Image (cartoon, rainbow, N blue to C red; front, side, top):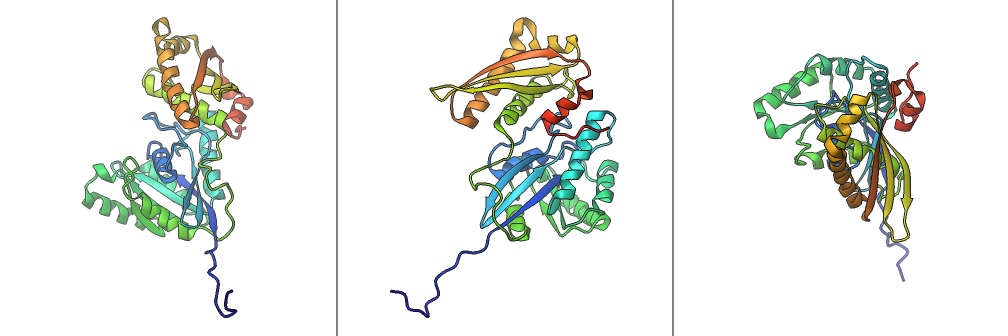
Length: 308
C-alpha cells in the first residue's frame, strides 16, 4: 500500500510545435532536416531549388515532438513554378511556431540572404540563426558572420553546425525541445514524416534523376508515382512517370540503349527497398508534357498552390 502522504511520480508535460527551416537555395536545409529527424525524409542534390513543396520531418527529443518544416529555398522567382515555391516557403515560415534561418557559412551574407533577413523581421515568433558547413569554414569567419547577422536581425540563439556530419545538431534539438509550446504530440511518435509514401517515392526517383543528369537536365523536370501495389509476398510494384518538356530531354533521360534510365531506376529501387524494408519492383516511364509547369493539376500533385 502507498502511504497517502507519498507523492506518486508524475510524467513531465509534453510539448509539440512547428519549426520552419528557411534559407537561400543550397544552404543545406534538406541535409540538416534529415540529420535532425535521424532518417531520410527530404531529398538532397547539388542542384539548386531541389525542394519544391513543404516537407515536414518529425523528431522526438526528450518529451517534445518537433515538426521541422523544410521549405523550398528562397530566391528571386522568374517563372510560375519559382513563384509557387517561394510563396510556399514563406507560408511555411508564417505558420510555424518558431523559425530557423540557415546560412551557408562559406558564402556568408549576400544580397539574397540579406533580403530574406529583412522579410524575416516582419514574421511573428522567435527566430534562431544556424550557420552551416562549419567543417569547411574557419572559426574567426564564423564568429564575424554570427555578429554581422545578429546586427541585421536579433536572433534568440545562434548555432553552428555541420549538417553533413551532424556536428552541433544535438544542441539545436535541445533548444527547440524547450522552446516549442506545451501540448499533446501531433503525430505518432514513430512517424518520421507526414509525406505520403507515393510522394516520397517520386521524390527519391527525382533525386536520382538529378544526381545522374546534373548538368544536362533542367530542374523543371518532375516525377509522379502513378501506381503502387503491395504484393502478397510484401514486395511493392511501383510505376512512375518522369515528365519532361521536350523530346530532346526525353532522349537524355533514356540514354543510349536505355542505359541512363536503367541506372536511375536501379539507384531509386535500392533506396526505396531500404526505406520500406521490402523488395521493390520499379518501372519508370518517360513522357513529354509540354508546359507542364503551367498546369494547375501538377502543382496540386506537388502540394503547391498554383500562382495566378
